[in-house]
Image (tube, rainbow over all chains, first blue to last red; front, side, top):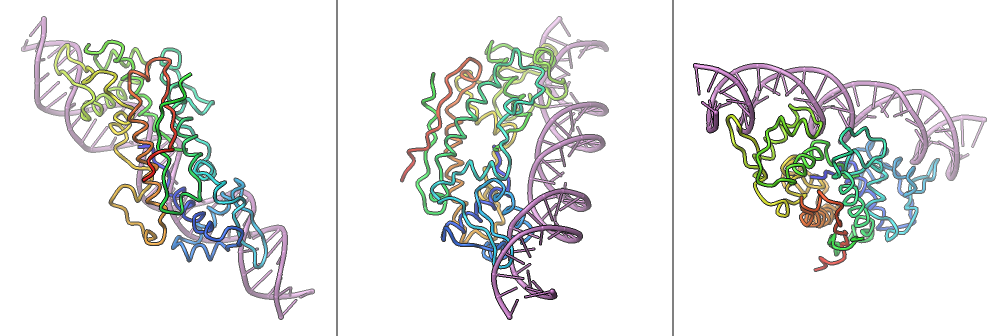
Length: 146
Length: 146
DNA sequence: ACCATTAGGACTAAAATGGTCCACTATGCT
DNA sequence: AGCATAGTGGACCATTTTAGTCCTAATGGT
């Protein structure tokens, strides 16, 4: 169910590693070595994370990447969005859908609500928490009644 | 993020349609017509839902499918699991993972916690709620602290 | 007997994913 | 100035997943 891509997972590992020394510059190579991930893959991920604003990059010799914000200010959604793109749970939630049922279905709308519920839950989980034997926020889904 | 497959969405539509008359038998063909989904696809989905125990099936002439349980007893996770299989958020959460990082990563474990949080949230959303302009449970993630 | 209907697969086409590589640009060091 | 080190951007490919189709049983009502 609800698979998260491997790359996102790897991305988290990278960020988690960097979170141990926020502010410090890490080269792609170093991260690849430390995390045991393939160098080209790491490079690709760092680019994506940089583009998304999660990392600051310094080019040239002795360059590298550093967390752009404090670990506590980087959420799980940020990471997922950065790597997988802001895809939604269902097709119809993306906006540019060509759903031919739509009219009578009425279900799509509800999935979207659930989707946004999950998003906000994931927003509450930060990199700081992901790195330690954390206390995971529990999904309750009880509120949001309107 | 966290994509749900189209088929799962279709499956929900089918179930939602059937939920309007719980207990009644619907043939695959009828459902295909009513939901505007391709007949072969509908057939495939109904088989999957049947196998998962969400639907009871009656073979032979005038046969069809009927909800196996009351709409309020069929949850969103049930549907997702039935169609997509009980896949987990991350690779390492599946059990048979060949994660080479594992040791130092420590992140995987946390994703699993989040995963189970989402699962239980999704378990709280039933087909009955999915069919109407429902009140979606809100994901809070605040508890589960241990 | 016959027809409607589910059951169980095999199979295909298209798309997404994971992963690699290269040519280019920026920056520090000597 | 020149070289080595790093990020940037994008093309590219192989593999896997996904969506979707179809065919051949099995089953049960009429």
